[in-house]
Image (tube, rainbow, N blue to C red; front, side):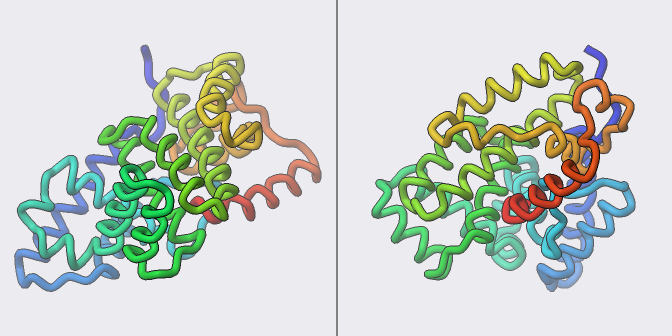
Length: 264
């Protein structure tokens, strides 16, 4: 099947591998490299290649720090660098290492035990931003092909059981994941018309049925991700995702941006 233009997984991996080449060169030269420097290298590479991080509708100020999840996943699971450079991973990716440990805890322990262990792993205080960053790591694993998509569904279920106060965040993240997945399928050429888009949306929402109908993303939200993250052009998207019109659509867009800020 012919693929559409835009940013493919293969291209993102290639860019991230180039960033890793810069990281290892600097690390091997003197063994001194900060997390802030790595964020800057990542930002420069994305700017040069004219792509944006994996994200929803919002653009939070720490977006590129959050995008270190993608760099971590490709470096560890795609390149096997964690075994060769354990000190580098401990120094630069200390947050991602803890998030990964928290994910494993949620997936393997009973809710009460998981809650206590995750709180300890994440420094005692767990807020929406911390949970969203943990979920972003799982999204990166799935997107780059290092984890099964069902693992996110299970993780959100276990998260809601261990931290019931974050069930609304779980719902938001499920909505984001569905929108992101559809945008990705459009980029790959798997979704090419409104009928297929709608069928895909309903099928994905069914996988998160325990969270209710609120996980269904609207087309304008999918479109923002398709344009910003996957660089898909308006002419292609017009045939799949109709634009919102008028002031009502603008207000809805601003409301969604606020609601989705935590998952970006």
